Image 1: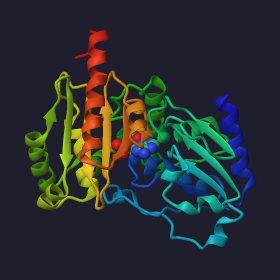
Image 2: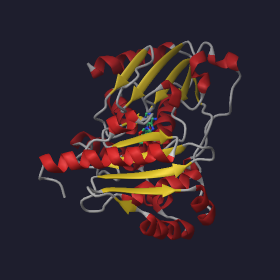
Image 3: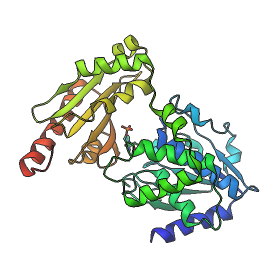
Image 4: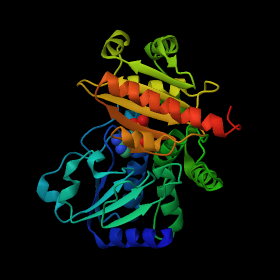
Length: 326
Ligand code: AMP
C-alpha cells in the first residue's frame, strides 16, 4: 500500500514542470535534511524541471548544510506541485504560500492528526522523514539519481531525528538505508563536528540547567528556561530549546520536559519520554508530534503546572502497571 502511495507521488513529480518543496517552521535536522535531500535528488534526476525549496524561516544551527531558494511572487506558485515534507499539520508549514500551488503532496512520519494534501504518504513508524526520502530513492533508483551531497543531507536528518540511532523507531531498515547513504559518500567526521561541537557558553548554560532542573514525585524532570536565563547566557531560542536533550538520561525519569519562554507571552514545551507515550499529553496542550517526542504550547504558569501534574500522573500509572522500566 505504501508502494502505491509512493508510486502516486513519483507520477505527480513526473507530471509537473515546477515543484516547490516545503517543511515545518523552526526547522530541525530532519526538516532541513529531508527537503534539501529531496530537492537535490529531484534536480539531479530531472534537470529540465524547476525545483525549488522556499521557506519563511531558517536554522542558524543547521546553516552549515547550506541555504534555500529566494522567495518567489504569488504567481510562481500557481501551476506548481507542492511537496510538504516532515510537517504533520498545515498550520506548521513555514511558507504559507504552499496553499497557492495547484496540488499538494504530503510526505511525513508524524502522527497524522490532521491529514491534508491531494496525495499523501505517511509512515508514522519511520525514524525520520529523511529515512522515507532515502527509501523513496532506493525504491525508484532506476528513475532517480543521488550523489554524496544528497546523501549527506539525508544522513544528517536520520542521525539527528533518531538521537544518533538510539530511539525506538530505529529499525533494521533504518540502518540499511543509513548504510546505503554512507556507501554513496558521507563525510561523517565533518558532519558530526558541525552537529555536535558546542560553544563554551552552551556548556555554561548546560551546567546551569543541571542546577535549575526539578523532578516530580514520580519522575518527571522539567526545566523552565526564562527570558532572563536566555539573556544571561546569550542564548538564541534555538540554543535554549536544545536544553531538552540535556535532561534525557536521568534514571527513573520516564518523561522530561523543557519549557522555553518565547519572545511573546507563549511558552514552548518540548516533551520527551521513554516507555510512556507523551503524544496525547501534547495534543491536550495545543501540540502534537510523535509518541515519545512531541511539542506543545502553554499560555500561563497555571497551564505549565497542570501539564507537569498530568505528566506525573502518566508516569505514576505506568510505574504501577509495569516493572520493566529503569
Ligand atoms: P519539538 O520538541 O518542538 O522538536 O517537537 C517534537 C516533535 O513534535 C517534532 O517532530 C515536531 O515537528 C513535532 N511537533 C512539535 N510541536 C508540534 C505541534 N504543535 N503540532 C504537531 N507536531 C508538533
